[in-house]
Length: 275
Ligand SMILES: Cc1ncc(C[n+]2csc(CCOP(=O)(O)OP(=O)(O)O)c2C)c(N)n1
Image 1 (tube, rainbow, N blue to C red):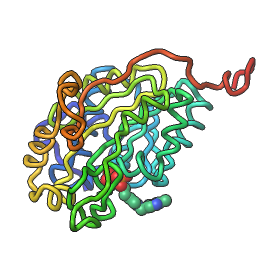
Image 2 (cartoon, protein in one colour):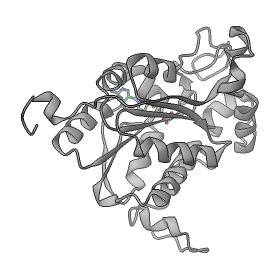
Image 3 (tube, rainbow, N blue to C red):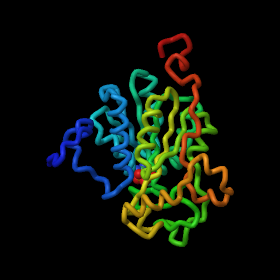
Image 4 (cartoon, rainbow, N blue to C red):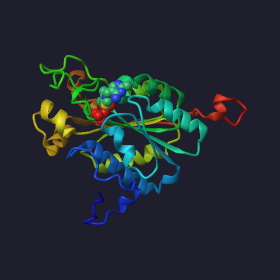
């Protein structure tokens, strides 16, 4: 089935023919990230013939399926091993990973640490909707304390994990957190991450109306989800004014690291060789 363009959308040309209608729920933040990425790619003039988009399994991990580029949709948590092989084999390629927070912070967490440590020259976009959405809204390492999810009906008893701090500590050379309530900043940050040489991690805080919204914030209205994110966000510059307890349920938004360092590439794997 093809969807007629009611208003011709210039970004439509970046979508894989026949990939619509998409499978995202109404108001899903992951679909917004797809839109942000297309806008960033368009503004950069990114060559889609040299783009490889990689997703594991999950709602966010479906994003590559819609891109008119080489796409790999594979195994939950294993995006970075593929990205490593692809990038080392052909350094000319732009490799972009789309991962859910469950994917990046739980099952794929160690791959993230090693890729950051190596400074693998890829961009990893983590779509953080604070739960395992595709499997029914289970608690994730990123879920804030006390929140209700499908597996924490009495409230989450665990502390939330800060993926950006992890990436910084592991050696990533570009690390930023953005959110769906600030589209322009997010697009700008994605552009910088794509252009960055080295391991770039961008975490995008996203609403999940169907699972997280319904249980954790009591509304499946996407606008409420976005409002909730805005209310729980604080800029990096203001975060220093808040106590640690106040930050426990806040998203610190900003760019944490942007620096140059040697990247992991073919010649560093086989010194003196072509890789
Ligand atoms: C190896 C493996 N473990 C578990 C699963 C089940 N599984 C599929 S999607 C998913 C949740 C994905 O959550 P997240 O990565 O946060 O992405 P979201 O769906 O929220 O975008 C899980 C646990 C799987 N497919 N493969």
